[in-house]
Each structure stands twice: as structure tokens, then as C-alpha cells.
Length: 403
Image 1 (cartoon, rainbow, N blue to C red):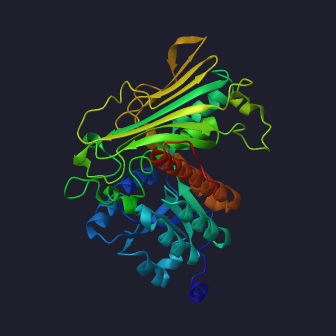
Image 2 (spheres, rainbow, N blue to C red):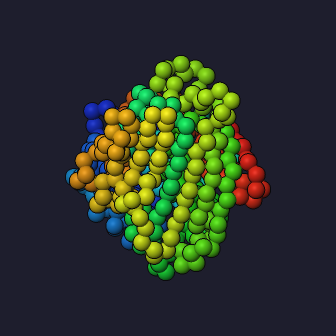
Image 3 (cartoon, helix red, strand yellow):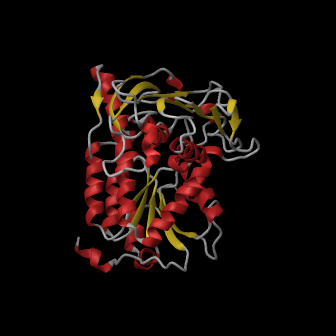
């Protein structure tokens, strides 16, 4: 659009805080604000949300600044305010899934960098549209997926790559959450999950929402997914009011060569499978309940089994007051060795700090290749979720489409 010439991309000064606008002030932004306050170096200059109440809640949580953030009901109002627009170099977009494409494209067209909450988009067409827009944009498009920066996951990947459990032969993940202790999605006035209840707005149910955080770690440690066979169940918990699935179970078949052709690093040797054994298979389960207590303290989130031991991610990682944990079982530790202090707090949510540090670094370097990888990885996560949905209808293996 011609009016983009009036809105040149705000340069990022490496010696000054990165100024961002938060577009969408839902419950997940609470955790992002805690991360931004912890790491420093990022100033929240503006808030955009139709709800003045949501803006008020987030305004009280943003990192301290000499002036409170400006407030706008929608992104266009901010972009039309030339002074405010010029001051913000980055738009952090955390809106309902069905708005990801249009709002992210609007910000990119205005010459801004964009940090987008996962999923990249709820459809493959949307993912491709954003990838195309980002390719020709002045600013960078990054997707905020913190699970690779979850300390347990990054440590598990490090240990697996150095042979701590031998050759990886099996992996499983189990995402489970109860509205009884829900801390990520928030609730609306009726006690439901708001826009997440809508299949049209969310693009699915538990899998494409919280479940994506459990799909990425499987891909991080096991390689890219070739195909999926799975089932999904609906209306298991009517109290949730979800139109999408509340439960799903799937087998993920990894690519026979799960690492890039260019990768010859010995650290990938743990993924080599025995001859004639077929590709690596992982299991994925997701389960959301309404009010039932759940066994966060004993049921593993992830289990990676190798020829010489296991790595287990366990504990209260979805509870900000719990630390979660990683336990290594091998010949030296046959009864298991805890690799993080038992009194550590934060668990999964500490990943928000590390992903923001990484994104800030990418933005300061203007690293387009790193940004492209962020988009490709996020698109691949969505492709796994959509293949699971397709398989649930076809009752057969479905390939994960390339983006």
C-alpha cells in the first residue's frame, strides 16, 4: 500500500530498549509481561485491545517505565497515530487465532517487526500467506513458541545429542490441563474459554492450542514428522463448552532421515535407527478436563527412551508455583537422577524469558535467516496438528503437508 511510505520501519537501536506494542491483551500476555520484566531491555510503549479492562490489567503488569503505555482499541488506531507508530519498532500480536493472518500482515505492511503468538495460523493457507508476506516485508516475522526454550526440553536435547541415553528408539508426550488450575487461557464471564470455544476462531480444540507446545519438543528431539494417525474426541467435557476436541491421541511417524541433508554433525547420530526397523515413532496425547484434579506431580509430560536409558520430563511444569523437572535414567543412574533443583519455580513458564531473549537478539541483529526458521518451524507444528485432525476423520495415516 502506498501509505506505507509514510511509515518507515522503526530502526532498533542496539544501545536502547526495544519498544514494542502489545496487540491483544488476553491471559497469555500475563506470562509474557512477567518474562519481559525479568529480562529487561524491552519497553512496552503501547497496548491495543478492544477491552479497556484487559488493557488495564496488562498495563499494571508491563515492565516499569517512565511513562505508562499508550492505549488503543485496535492496531489501525495505533498505526494511524504517526508519533506512536514511529516510536514502536515491534508489534507483539496475541489475538484469537483467526485474526493472526490479517493483523500480522497489517503490521508487516506498515513496516514493523512482528512477534506473533503461536500458532502461526490455524490453516495451511494462512501459514503460507504469512510466509509469503514476510518474505517481502521490511520487518521480521517471528513466532513466539517457548517450548524449545523450556529448560527441561533444551537440556534433554543436549543430553540426547551427547549420547546420554544411547540411540533414541521411542518418545511420548502427554499434554493435560484442567480448568480447575488453568493459568494460560483465562475464562470468560460464563466460566468458559471465550473465543477458544469456537472451532471457527480457534481452528480446532486442545491440539492446535496448548497441544502445540508439546508437539514442538517431540520435533526438537525426534526430527520432522512425516505422517500422523490419530483420533480426537468431542464433547467429553460439556462444561468446557469447546466446539473443538477436548481429547486426542496420535502416533507420529518421523521421517526416515529426520535431520536436514546438510547436517553431518555427530550430535544427530542418536536419531539413527537400526536397519529394517522402520522410522522412529512417537506418541502424542492431549487431554483437557473441566474441574477434575490431575496428576501433574507423577504423570510425565515427556518420556524419551533410548537404547541405554531414558529422559523423563515430569512435575508441575504448567503451574507457575511448581518447578517441573527432568530425570535421567542410565547405567550410572539406574534409579534416576534429578537434573534441576527440587525447589526451583517457574517450570514451563521460564521458557517465556528465554524465547524473548532469543527474539530480542534476532531483532537486534536483523537476522532474517533466523526469522525464516522461526516461521518454518511454527508452520511445521501446525501441519502436524492439521494432519491429526484429518486422520481423525479418515481413520488412516495422513502426511504432514509441506508449507
